[in-house]
Image 1 (cartoon, rainbow, N blue to C red):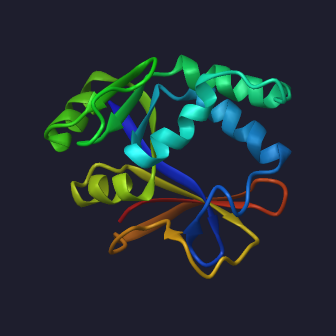
Image 2 (cartoon, rainbow, N blue to C red):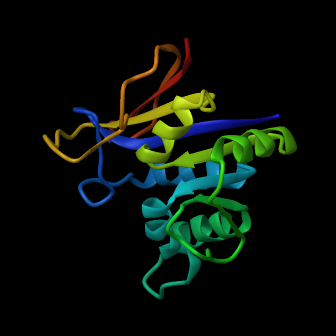
Length: 176
């Protein structure tokens, strides 16, 4: 059975914003390895549109960015959206009864499926489908933005804390 993991970079005050801060080289390498090991990724519309950046090569990319793009392109993606009519390569649109679709997906796959986007994660949390939360805490304070938890926080239990290089700590939680 697949495990749904919601993990994102987060400021110390609880916000996610890919434009305000980014992973350093060691953490980016971690994300490359993680993408290689995942059986897929699931996105809401907004984050999927941002991640489509990785669909095409860019001449300014270094080896690490090319490695991430290759890992990202290889894995299947599921895009939860009622407004999109089509999705890109290696992606499947989930636009109806997401609870049933995601439960079926979890039984059909084995391994980790990355959940991207706080709004989607809230919907999946409300349905009891998120198995693990990974908060990558960066030493920045934003004071505004999109919160990691887009709704009431579920009761969680800490199962791991790891230094991830470049002053980032990963906190891993499971539902309590």
